[in-house]
Length: 284
Image 1 (cartoon, rainbow, N blue to C red):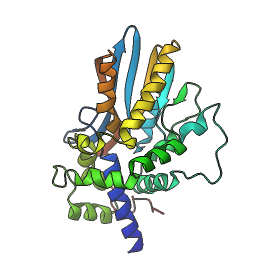
Image 2: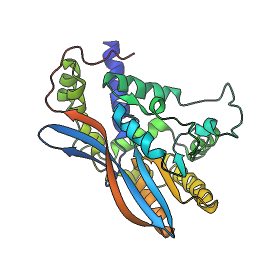
Image 3: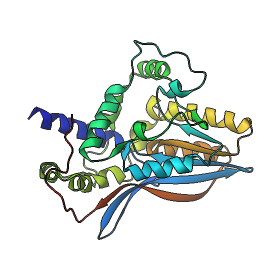
Image 4: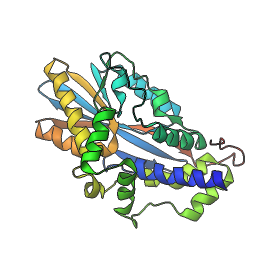
């Protein structure tokens, strides 16, 4: 019973946080054989420079992260999202031993990822690659700015969930529980994929002026502009899709033009579920 309660809590949090998606940057491509959760790679150009917004999913198929790794190597600089990711920078100061981190959040993603037979983003991406540039707030900055605004990660996720409690594509609780009890990770993913892939029309209601979206986007584009000023011509920005409506607006205001969009499959879920019992890995 306790384990089931922990899993339910984890799924609730994961759905609230990952489902903070954005229309046009994350979608579900579906046919009779499979449902595919996909993230966009959207290109913007200006005066001979190119910037790609690359949507991130925190838990996904291993092949998704392998495809991203291949793509990342093609950029002059790859700007990445990670609160506390300054530890990967060459000139980063030593991390304070007692400094608060986001390990609890990473543990939640890890537990749900194992339950769904998916791989974690942190474990799958080499953030020490030479062209990787941290383009996010430091842990200290994030904590102070959230305190100043009276925000919290959990509060933000709950606010997102309350913004549209009757929104379409919400998973049926009974069907989700039945899928979980069936022992099939694919059945569970089929129940929740449309929640994760829906265009999140209510995002403006809770992300207007916030540390989690707005302030981090400002920092990211500050880093981008420094890279462009230094002569970089081909940049990638690897961030969660929820950041992209605001980030796109800022790029367009700077004179960039949107020129193309490709899609990568993060979850490839076959509808012919062959192995129910025992497929789900034990979550801890």
